[in-house]
Amino acid sequence: MERSDIEKLLRKVMAKFVDQEVIPVAREHDESGDFPYDLFKKIADMGILGIRYPKKVGGSGGNTTLYCITVEELARGLLSLGATTAMQCLMATDGLYRYGTDEMHEKYLRPAMRGEKIGAFQLTEPEAGSDLSNVRTRAIKSDDGWIINGMKTWSTSGPIGHFHTVLTQTDPDKGLRGLMFVFIPTDTPGFSHSKKFDLLGTRTTQMSEIYFNNCHVPDEYMLGQLGRGLDVLLTILSEIRVMTAALALGLQRAAMDDSIKYCKERVQFGRPISSYQLIQAKIANMAVNLEAGTLMSYKVTHLIDKNIPCLNEASMAKYFTTESACKAADEATRIFGAYGYSMEYNVQRYYRDNRFLLYGGGTHEVLQTTIARQYLR
Amino acid sequence: MNIITLIKQVPDTTDIKTDPKTGNLIREGIESIINPDDRHAIEVAVSLKEKYKGKSIVVSMGPPQAIDAISEAIGMGIDEGILLADRNFGGADTWATSFTLGKAIEKINAYDLILCGRQAIDGDTAQIGPQVAEFLGLPQLTYVMDIEEVDDRRIIVKRGLGNGYERVESPLPALITVIGELNKPRYPRVDLLINACKENARITLWNAADLKVSVQEIGLSGSLTRVIKTFSPKVKREGEMLKGDKGEAVGQLIERLAGNYLI
Ligand SMILES: Cc1cc2nc3c(=O)[nH]c(=O)nc-3n(C[C@H](O)[C@H](O)[C@H](O)COP(=O)(O)OP(=O)(O)OC[C@H]3O[C@@H](n4cnc5c(N)ncnc54)[C@H](O)[C@@H]3O)c2cc1C
Ligand SMILES: Cc1cc2nc3c(=O)[nH]c(=O)nc-3n(C[C@H](O)[C@H](O)[C@H](O)COP(=O)(O)OP(=O)(O)OC[C@H]3O[C@@H](n4cnc5c(N)ncnc54)[C@H](O)[C@@H]3O)c2cc1C
Image (cartoon, rainbow over all chains, first blue to last red; front, side, top):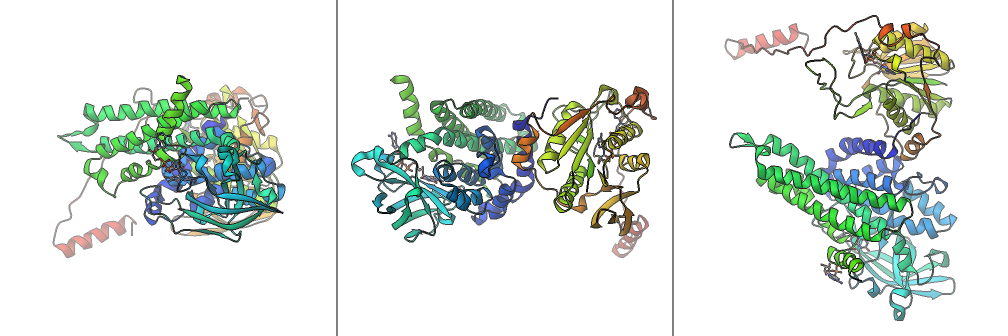
């Protein structure tokens, strides 16, 4: 007997969850700007936070495709919820999963999958955005571990996190070859953070600067090999980018769904505005971009699930879907006319929120450069 | 405690459109879902299982794609599913459906409780639960809005009556049909959902031969009703202006509302 198709079934289940639990409260959460703990708990109870991890560590035994379907649907409801869930499932926990000891799994990974502990992933510094070779947070070897000094910025979930995967420099002379990830629990003496950033969009994302002042961690908190921080990042870079693409797809669908509904209802000159060809063109472009972006993105997730390298395709998917999402949100606000400029409707949120996707996972200037490099070399 | 839950896959809309020519349901573009009341039944089964151990099984009669409803039920925590699918089951009215479901339950044999939704949002008859209970000779408790007590010998429930409730005790095994007020169904868990879609998922297919039923007893031939024609009745709303001054008009309005038992 043919079994159910998990990709279709999961999408259906997630769509229902988002329609029933997320969309009705999305605006409220965006306005409050608080972390949506209640929704996060519901997501955890569904086993979503462990979706990428095998059962033997307490995960749900899924893969990148299922992960992306899930965060795409969440992003359709509230982009920041999709983004923080995506962070918890991947960047915040992957180093811990791959390189952490059993004890660390017990103390941090399993609680993270149950939604009881929140993780953060810290690369960016004031002087190191696109250019990670300029990371200055120092890790210095001590007798029984490492001592960390420095600061990070733009840390998603940083100020509410219980543990942090932090990119540090062990030897400034070595540049990229001196980079190393360390695991730093929030209760490590010397850890502190700034007040929360005030953001244009994704306002439920809790973001701040993070400071490390002589933070001492044991040897086993070094994630991966000494000086191989870049490799640790490369291991998940395709996945980070395609996840970002999935978030963009979700946002694009929200913008398109709202546009379709509105243009059929709004009557001007005696006819619904959907009957005007210039409005139809906007809907057609949204649909074409969505279809193309979906094909690009899920091609990448299936490659990742087969362990086939696909960084270039992942970069293209992230670049294309994010630009499409920006366009869709822009066009949606035009279809809504003045109401698109009002805080009463959700399209203004899509317009603000989608800007985040331009930077997270690599800026488009950097992505275009790296994509072109594949063809010009 | 062993619990069997009967679930039906239905189109995801209460606004069902029919083809004006054939009278058939237009299913195109409409997703299928687990009948909403049945989710509440699944929630009862899973929470009772968590409390009392035992086995929980869902049974659904439908086309092959009804397996999705079963997979989702397993995602919610049900142990096993049985799909009753056979071309000869097609065209069944409620009599033939109940007969077939009853035969499947007899084949499963070991059960303490059978759960149904009150009503399917497409067929809408609310007949299946009571008919299955009759077929199996079990006590039936319909419109259950609360389960107060249950152990391996008896169950005490509240039956919703619209303007109140009735508290009833019954010995087990029994069949209950549940309404939405009863609980808030959980969402499926990803790990269980993944298991449910695997080759070795605990889902079995039974056809007419497995149930040892003859073609005359099931499907269209086993049905006692014949559908001559289906159509959407024209709904006519007629307004009525109440005459007189404010006081009189309000008085008349109250009379009308009370007369129709609306207040
Ligand atoms: C909402 C949000 C959440 C974030 N969460 C995290 C997080 O959790 N962890 C984390 O570590 N970081 C996070 N970031 C930071 C993000 O990763 C950085 O913004 C990103 O790496 C870019 O760095 P930057 O902002 O410093 O820009 P810069 O690198 O300063 O870039 C500025 C401009 O210069 C362009 N530019 C830079 N280099 C080149 C080049 N070589 N060629 C052409 N153009 C170039 C850029 O494209 C951009 O237009 C987050 C950012 C946002 C907005
Ligand atoms: C007169 C008549 C003629 C019909 N003729 C046809 C026909 O020709 N072709 C056709 O396809 N359909 C036909 N049907 C529809 C079909 O008989 C019903 O859909 C089916 O019997 C279930 O009835 P219901 O939908 O009213 O369910 P209800 O009685 O409202 O459902 C109550 C509960 O019973 C359980 N249940 C119901 N159906 C199933 C099921 N299949 N598997 C497991 N559990 C279930 C569920 O727990 C559900 O919540 C006919 C119905 C009627 C009334």
